[in-house]
Amino acid sequence: MTIKNFFLSSFLSLKSSVSWILFVSRRFAKVDRKGSSAVTTMLASAGICFGVMTLICVISVMNGFQHSFIDVIMEVSSYHIRVEGENPEFESFCLSEKTVRSVTPFYEAQSLMLGKSGKEAAAMIKAVPPNVREEDSGFKKQLQMIAGHFDLSSPDSIVLGSELARKCGARVGHTINLYALSGGNDVDLFSGERLFTVTGIFHTGYADINASFAFIQLDDGKKYFGRDARLIYGIKLFDEKADGREISRIRQKFPGLECESWKSYNRSFFGALQVEKNMLMVMVFLIFVVVAINIFNGMRRMVYERREEISVLSAFGGRKASIQSIFVMQGFLTGLSGSIPGVILGLFLSVNMETVFMLLSKISYYASLFAMMLVSPENGDLLRENPMFMLYASIPPKIFLNEVLVIALFGILSSLLASFLASRGVLKMTVVEVMRDE
Image (cartoon, rainbow, N blue to C red; front, side, top):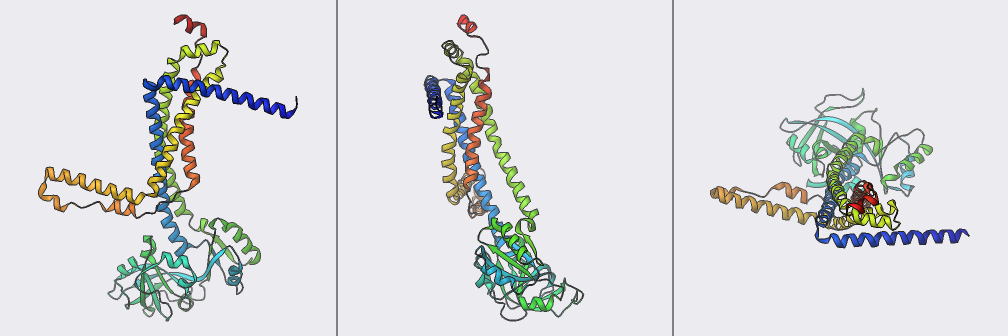
């Protein structure tokens, strides 16, 4: 027998075996269409469907919530790669790299600000080129001006975060004093002469940046931060996952510069976000555990109810593994019939998440209003819609195909595993015992 004939015969044998298993499984399903087993199967499929749908919606909202923070941090604060040290050829080298989207030189220092009314607030001062918004589209997109302009063309100009301006009681045109400033020995720790004029107030999607960041021009950074201040290049890539390869090229070309990836620079923050997401997934995955237990109990009852048919199949030469495969196939079909609608519903709700939350807001409001009118009608005018629904509706969901596939496969595998464990008791009784009792 040639290898080709061997594989052909193996394929035909496997096809015949699978066809037989599917045929018997469908016959069992038709007989159980009106019994308790049918109800159990329907509930199991519904449970998997709602579990998959819920998990996809929750993960997409969580992704959108996290990436709204991550995008702001990357574009305004962190950058994909931070390179410390000065080299006149480095900036031109970065701009020649096809993987680099932008490169921004800057200084940074910590400060204690004093506003016009004597209010004080701690801040991170970043000295950037005056044309940074024109050169960096991501920076411009995430940093929205709510008052004045991002104007650092004049010396001693400063742009404040919205919450930082509120803490200092500052508005556009007011004077801010960088009373305490970190730096080297040539920088006075306390000084009342570092006066800056507020030219603009910005707002981002990340509260910590709004509450602690301020921008001045690069020349002012050189002037006030001292000789020990190190120039930092913030590099943004088209592909954030290419940071390792780009760092290797920089180190080979400029061994005297210090490079740090966004993954290590924001390790604690991103680690906390990942732990939060993992714990949320574990909690929602418990839905599948409950459904799997339901499938396990229902399949064990089905195996017991089908002991006569199992004995007949065994008497006609059916192997134990083949007979067990019939029930495993039913579990697979149950998981598949639940996962596919769950994926469709989950994707549909995720894409229309804003409409869903607005609808939930209306339902919650009118339900509360109805209850209020029954109990205390005079206070009905004081009731308002829950603003949290508006906040959730403003979060753009992010859907990742690999996560959707993992969730769908987990729904199918949980049903398969439960069916496999429940059907292990096939043919525990001998064929003779079953036929004699019946």
